[in-house]
Image (cartoon, rainbow, N blue to C red):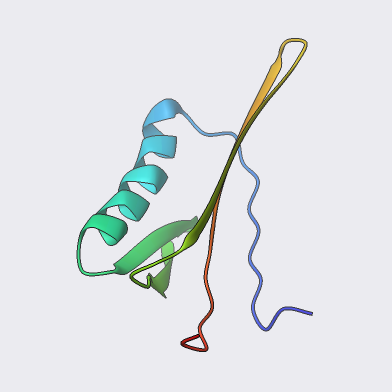
Length: 78
């Protein structure tokens, strides 16, 4: 079981989706810190390492398109 888990599903405008992606991009390109909006005016702060494992998936099923971008890393320093 995860120590911390947060999942949010919500319909977003392209502009709202861009806010999430921009926050991540700035964190990766900048000092490694990111504050992700989680609704209700709150944020979740993360510290990003120098190296991450990345997965990218695009799935088209009829008229439905799904894009998944996943980043993972260890906090143990290994």
